[in-house]
Length: 526
Image (cartoon, rainbow, N blue to C red; front, side):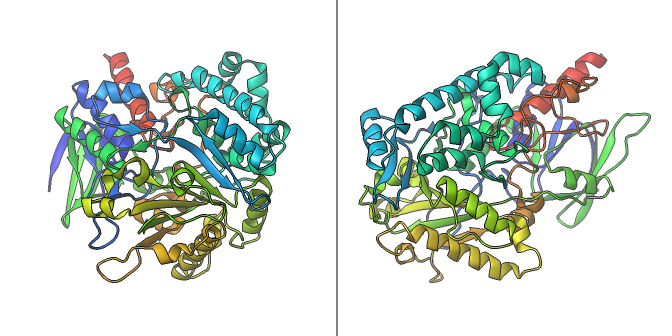
C-alpha cells in the first residue's frame, strides 16, 4: 500500500499531462503522473506495429500544428518538426489530372488548378488562405492566455472575418468562395477531421474544427514530428522527470475521493502490479475525458459522444503508381485526398446518417517516411519502403452499434482499400510488406478500438466535440480554472487534456493552461 502526498496528481500520461507536469514541477511543486498504459504518451506514441518489421509508426496521432513554440521553449523540449514540401494532392476523375498544391512553386500550383478546369479558383485560394492566416496571426497568440470573450475575439478579428468563419456555416463560406467542386472539397476536409457534420452544418461544429486546423503557430502549417510522434512525448516525459515530476506507468486509477474539509485534498486510488495504492493531492488534473472523470468520482458516465473516423496504418514496399500519372513522391508528399470532393463529402455524410458505410469512403493519406525516413530501419530505407497513414472520414461510432466489431473493422478496412484503389494504377494490397508471421503489414483502428485502447468516448479523438477557443460573453470567471478554460465543475479538479476548452490535437495547450490555473490559484491563496 503506497500512500503519499503531492501538490498535484495528474491522471493520464498523455502529452497534455506531461506538459502540465513539466510546468508545475518547474515551478517547484511536487507532481505525480499516473498512466494506465505501460508507455507514456497516450495517443501520441510511436510503435512497432508489425512483428519483425523495423518501423516505428505514429500509431494514432500523426501530424503536429498546434504545439506552440512557446511550450517547446519554456520546457526546453527536444522536438523537431519537419515541414512537408507539398500541401496536398487530389485526383480529379473528371479530367484525369489532379490538383497538386506545391508550396515551393506557385507557378506549378497555378498550372495544376488550370489542369482540372479550375483556373479561376487559384486566386480565390490564395485570398481565402490569406484570410485564415490573418485569423491565425490574431488568434493563436491568445490560446496560452486566460480566455477571452466572444465579443473580444469578434472585435479582434473584424466583422468580415467574424461573419465568414465564425457566424456563417463554413461550408457556405466555401461554396460562396470557390467554383470547383473538387477545390471546395479540399478546403472542406479541414472542417471534418474527427468531426461528423454536414457540409451545411448549422451548429457550426464544422467551423470550430476548421478553425483549429488553420491557426497553428500563426500559419496553420501541419508538420511531421521527426522520429515519430513518440519522439515528441518522450522529450516531454524526459523534461518532466528532469524538472522533478514523478511519472508512473501501469497505474490504473479507479476512484477519486471527495474533498477533505480539513486538508482540502482528495485521494486518488489506483491499481499497480495487482496492488491497490493511493495518493493524496491538493490539485488533481484530469487528462481524461469527462465521462471517465465522472466514473472515477462515482457518478454516471453515460454520454452521447462519438467519433467519426477510421485510421489505417500500412507499410509498403514502395509508393504506388497513380492513374493520373503524377509523381508518387509529389502526390504522397503532402495530404493525399481521395473521394473528398464537396459533393462526395455530403453524400458520404448522408449515407453514414442512414447507417451505411460511405461508398466511396472519403479518405486522406499521409506518408510520414517521405519527410522523415528515420522512422524506418536502414534496410527498409534502402529498399524504398514507405509508411502510409490513411484517415477515413464520416464513419461515426453509431455505425458499429449492434454489429460484430471484427466484421465491421474488416468492412471498413476494405472500404478504405477500395477508395484508395479507385485512384491507383495498381492494387495497394500487392504492395504491402509481410511481417514475421506472414501477415500483410496493415492495421485498422475503429472508433471502438480507440475507446478500448485509449478511453476516448465513442472513439472521439478530441474527447468531446471541440469548443470555440473563447468564452461566451456571459461566462463566469470566478475561479482560475474558469479563467483558463480548464474547469471540471468539481472543486480541486481541473481538466488538462482535450476535454478542456482549447483542447484537441497534439498541442500541449490544455496542459499548459491547467498548470497556469493551478499556479494562479495557489498564488491568490497565499
